[in-house]
Length: 430
Image (cartoon, rainbow, N blue to C red; front, side, top):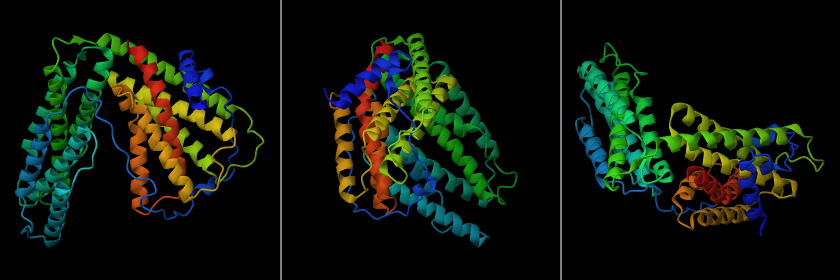
């Protein structure tokens, strides 16, 4: 049995007993030089990390291609209403609107990176928002007052969102299927709620404040796009199911149980890592070990916050997914501390070490999804995003060697923990 396999088994046992065993042996770490993290970025070859192949989408139904087509059509229609060189009395405003239109059109024509269909739709919602802002700016600058129409549109979007949220019921063939089917729906409903609120009000004098008018219009356009996608996702899923049963009660119970497991496990980690004296094995300042520990520690905190936020909002499918992410992150933290205590991650950062770390990270991601388990596939997403992030950062000639190596070591640890986290979550759903 490998060390990683043993860790994953201890992880499952630890979470089941309030997390006490999952971090056995953790200790404080001797970091003394906080300023060492602010190092000057060093250039790395653009191919040092490389891309990672995304697995098939875990969403349990095919997302209709018509959704992206609708967004694109709407985006281009709105941009077509704005001339490339607006003829306005205020030359500065005309130039700014023309520039906004050019940027929005350039984004609309750009290729969308490979990913899951939900990500493609997210990209088009942002493009649609950009186009709506440009159109709103132009209409305001030319004397059109869209305040009454915008208020009515906002009310309609809010009503549609409320109707969909009330009728959610989490109908599915199983609780596990409900999690994967309704997490993106909940995410879209949350997106709609954020954008439909009048945090940016339409100005009383739109000619004087065309860009504020454009922003107000764009937010409602984004909210409309989100709630439309949410309803379409749910309907596409239900259309492929024969009389699916409501899974509300079992999903709520699982989300509550998993939230408790996450909170208790995180609390034990905090106590063990922060409450003991640092081991007498030298100062880790400026090492990959320090960067790795700091990065994973922050991810654990954010992951736990995401669980609590989703649970408090009543987004039960999202809470389950975020709990799985948090548990994998906690296990990654435990594994990182074990490896650091064993003397790992203390070598001088280098291009060769980064290449090796990248291969280990991508291998761990592949292994996490090799059984085609959709829940594990969903949970591994933070690892996929992290690899893409460091690859993009290197392409942009930004980011230190040490930080890059630490990020990739995190992906290795996190992705290695995903199968056990998925197994534990699935047991709570059955």
